[in-house]
Image 1 (cartoon, rainbow, N blue to C red):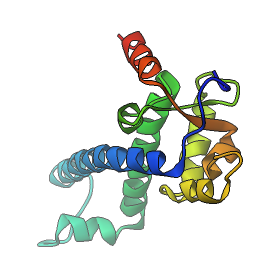
Image 2: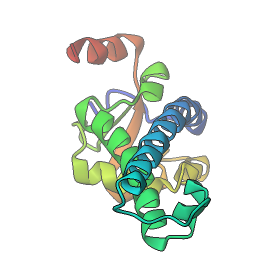
Image 3: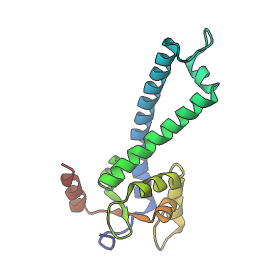
Length: 166
């Protein structure tokens, strides 16, 4: 499928990133709620001691261990979100809306290791700026690092991929 569809340009990637950002924000909010609830349970059972009257958020910020766990949790949830969709269909929710698909250079679905490399290489979306100067290949930093590409699909192909998920 690699030669079948053109590589996606910057603006379609950017629009897809905006859509996916809304999902990521929602996931982050849910993760925060569950994390704070877990901390509250640990405090109320006495497994973690908190200074009297201290705000739980300040308590977490003042604890390098809890703060590190929180950061790792947010990164992990986001990597799992993108990796799951990329390895299952090649499309996140935003990519589906903008008819984009991430794939290996020979047109197959990417592996979990490639998806993790893509996530880390994306640099919060800044890796896509490389597409603006890579006129010939239209590849982002994360594409180069993970040996993948993002292609713009036809409406028919996008529908076919969506139907295959059922």
